[in-house]
Image (cartoon, rainbow, N blue to C red):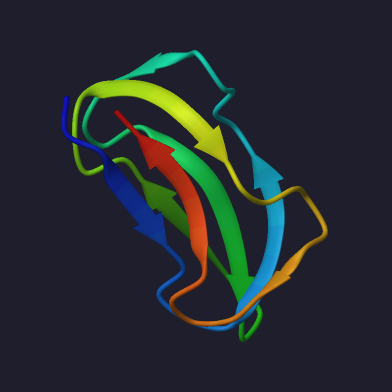
Length: 72
C-alpha cells in the first residue's frame, strides 16, 4: 500500500494533534494544527487511509518540510 507523508508547509508550532496512530481518516480530515505568524493552519490528509505514524506532538516547533505524519 502506498504511503503519503504530510509535511509542514512553513516554520511554526504544533498546537494540537487530532489524529492518532491506527486511526482511519478520510481525505481532508485535519491531522494537526500548526500555528505560524499568529495564524492557525490545519494540516489535512491528502488521501483516505490509516495513520501509520505521527512524528510530532503538541508544543513542538517544526521547520518547513518537516515530516508531520505518515498515512497509509
